[in-house]
Image (cartoon, rainbow, N blue to C red):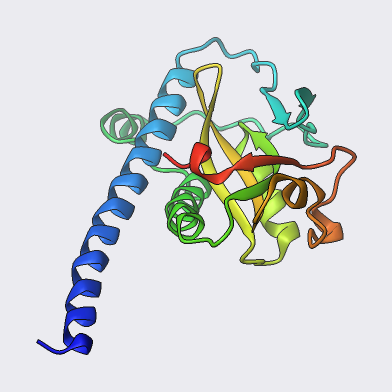
Length: 193
């Protein structure tokens, strides 16, 4: 077997494993988010307090609240309620984030550096979606799964760097993603599942 054939054969096996691990990760993230959604649905109708966003530097900064309250939902029709009891529809935003997390786990595990700049740990999908919009499709932005006090959350990272000093500086971070809080450095191997 020539070197080219061996490399091609090796890629095929790695591609299959990558596919399986990506499918497993998407399923795991969807299961975590679905469980959180179900558990939050059993609570009283009063809105729960916003989960804090955790940024590096050991500070907890609350996530910004939306400017307007969500519209009141119309009562479900009996047939729709029966369908919802069997299989609730998956929120498209959560589906988008689950796919993004699986892709970013693969991309970050293949990154050259050992450190990344952590921008935020957010438990509200809206916060992460706003950051994705602000990044404008930048490939250096990574969204990973995280857990805060038992809740399924998201860790948002930027870039990959050779050392923690460069990661904390994040000199290439676009202005649209900068905040009052400085990014912190996290070791990539410690935040990958």
